[in-house]
Image 1 (cartoon, helix red, strand yellow):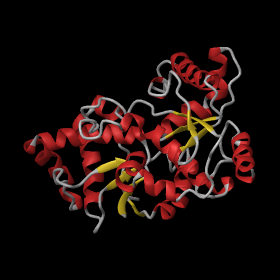
Image 2 (cartoon, rainbow, N blue to C red):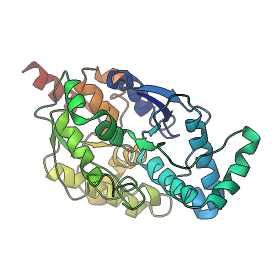
Image 3 (cartoon, rainbow, N blue to C red):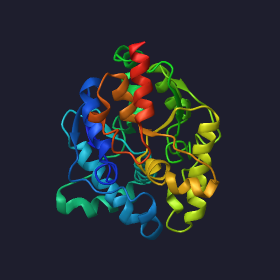
Image 4 (cartoon, helix red, strand yellow):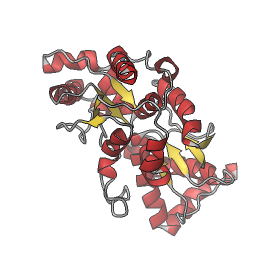
Length: 300
């Protein structure tokens, strides 16, 4: 399947292991990714707070670039925050021909134009795994089943609400997709209180205590539920849950130390790729225990 690919800015900056692991996994999923290397930041909802038309123009620019990729079935992102911000923008653009024309006027200088909806879509990797590839095909690609690995899914907030903006009327199970993918790879999904809650990252610059306390509580809940690791489809969540985890531990006054994986890294392990090639040595919280357990299970 050929797709216009928007990796987002965080995966190419703060979390290059996500960008790299996606590049390794894509061919194994039969995905032909055409990277939109001239596309811009989605704004993460921040720009829209100050200038909504600017934010919508930036995202319409990315959509127009994606629509110009010949033969692409749609556009793929690997960031839940991008999905949320872009879905909000697309909803506004599609609802008003006049507003869409105003935004497209800003794009004329680059020869770009966003065309409303139709069969074109923008989906996070998680949605593509279930809706476009399918769980049966995903299971067929597993060469190293993750049986015995207990994984806590962390959706974050941007990919699960508001449901009216994120296509839940057509795909009501999207709030369980991460559970379903974990099971398809042979691992055991672990339910815990914070799986669908905000990681705290959006408020870290305004209220660091609240942000890190949220992240710490979620990771503590996952540990208490018996998870070996957590997996997320959002690099911004990964920043708060992995990079900030040593600091978050101080705010919940307990030891944490639970590894947090990017979704493509979990896929890559099940597909037989080496952890080093997936960037799993780059995390703040060591993934060595997860790597050792997967290897031990594979040997057994």
